[in-house]
Length: 371
Image (cartoon, rainbow, N blue to C red):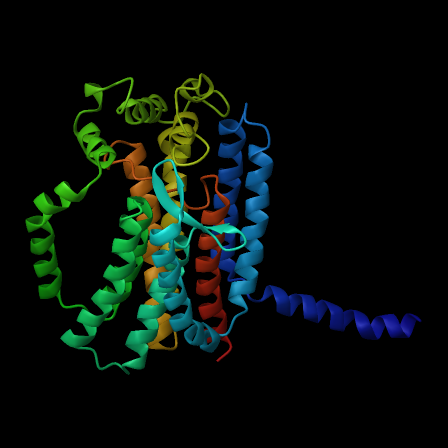
């Protein structure tokens, strides 16, 4: 019995070690530190909301499971899944527009046995599709290819914006744009796109819903309606400013615990965190995000194929978009568009999507190391 145990135990340890090799150590350590900050902030923000912290911890465990599963998927399998995943997601968006479920004035969900939000799929499906497309072109990329890629991007962007869900449309559109940018989009084209965007602002303004226009106007002067449309921005800015250099202390934020901050466990968690941990806490948070983005870009630079380089680069900069937009809207620099702070804000769907993204980065790094 003893000799048998001595024979089988090393094999078991080797198996366990192989399973954990899918995790990229620097990325995993940074993510764990970020999740510790997230748990600390959620404990305070969730006081008075039973089950919120427990749900947040559950979402973390689900995210790590998703990361492990995704990181184990071969790159060839991801490439094969790109087209059907994109086409299927577009089909679901069309179905949502036709007979989706309406909640709070938005048609974003559809019942396919379970209620899902197809726009979330595009955060992964669009960069996968564009990276696959450019990879298939074999490095021969000209204006025709960029125009086709632009069409592939614009279709889901418009369908999601029409729901209306401008926040998700921005995240999906930026992820697709980053793939096109890394594929070698000329600077002249970027300049032309910027000029076209500025010229189209009057048209875009006319297409916005009334509540979206209100959010833009409140950005310019939230005090015009301090108890109504400007309330979110005023209270979150007050919380951030009152945090000072080192904050008021954990669980001691007055704006938070006197219920002045709305949605303080989700989109506005950054206001709670800033009030209690101040500038120093924000500096640590920003450094962690910068490290994750930098590690993602390093993985992209060393990726073995065009497909993996484009995909990793787009995912890395997507984290920048998440963090920049959320912090910008909470601090009053951008309109409120409902974008969560990555791996901080409460939300199961966001954790799964972000987990898939991190898993793809780790999978690209693992398969490069095994070459």
